[in-house]
Figure 1 (tube, helix red, strand yellow):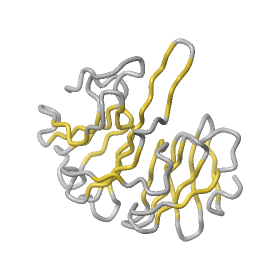
Figure 2 (cartoon, one colour):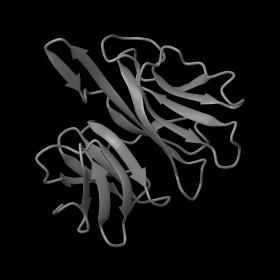
Figure 3 (cartoon, rainbow, N blue to C red):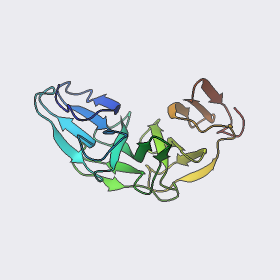
Figure 4 (cartoon, rainbow, N blue to C red):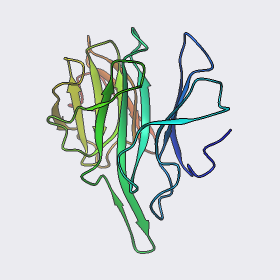
Amino acid sequence: MGLEDSRHVGGIVVDPRNSKVVFVAAEGSAWGPGGDRGLYKTTDGGETWRKVLEISEHTGVNNVVMDPVDPDVMYATSEQRRRHVFTKIGGGPESAVYRSADGGENWTEQTSGTGNNLLDVCFTDSQTGTAVGYDGTILRTTDGGNTWTGQSCGIMQYLWSVSFTDSDNGTIVGYINKIYRTTNGGETW
């Protein structure tokens, strides 16, 4: 429903308190600028949409997640990308992590230490999260995304997504074209 020009949707989140409140991370076309590109919110089950996070005509939002404890705290990742016949430009300088503390109404960039090349982010509680980057980096935060520390993920290719993290024992599960798992914070997979 709606967002006909979003082309690629990287993530959809439904508010657990009200199923009519939905967020859509729209990447837009990989081949050109514009379209429905950014983070959109509906409060009427998709009848109408409002853009709540816009970066530029070249940068869409590729993921959105809610804090598992407090749904008003949310994180979104943007991806600056462009495909051409001869190449793909991905992870440009407008790629970043954003945080909202008011149910997705206002967003602040949270990119200290990230290198601005993030593909995905996953939070296990209100303070602890893991992100993966274009440059093969695993990033961790323990302060709600205010600061990030990184290390190489040690895999020949970079991970496309992080779907589970357990900060107590260093377990991270992610995938490229297969599923990878680490139990030591990304040192070995």
